[in-house]
Image 1 (cartoon, rainbow, N blue to C red):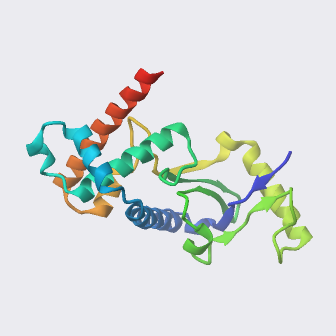
Image 2 (image 1 turned 180 degrees about the vertical axis):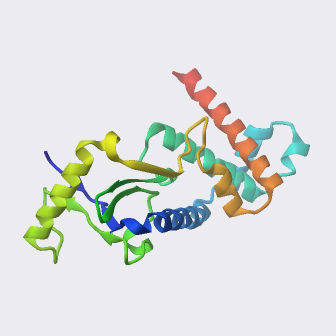
Image 3 (image 1 turned 90 degrees about the vertical axis):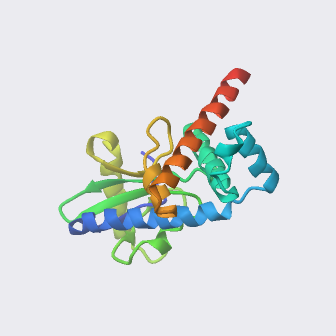
Length: 214
């Protein structure tokens, strides 16, 4: 079996609860920061506003340009997530976890632009393995072979033995993590509900257009 775990980590099993809370915080902070990077043009904002509200001028007034930009970003994220695209706006975040007597072994799936080696604490050590190029620098042959054995045993029974934790998964109809993300952006429940409804409306409009083209 060819084993390639380019983003594998391990940490003490006793710190699982701490790790889950930390991973959630990292993903929220990082995704909020990344969303600010992807600003669309004024024309795109106006076109998106018209798509959502049409002639409903009063409804549109409740949304700033920043709100409309966020709605557009979230819908593009949903479309990329649905298609499984490796897209800068696909910011789904999750991890899979396996255990032995001492360690928890983790594979993260995070947004482009999130460097997990820099974001994770020192007690969560890089523990990747691959067999197609030279081993990781500074790792002995014995330790490298041990990593292979660990990952082979874990990924062989992938669905049987793993613990999966999802922070964000923007697939309809569940939109895992969207409401908590909106709370991270702005602690205003009414605002969050407006954005959520606008995102759902725009997504279904665009999805309907895509279906009509097929």
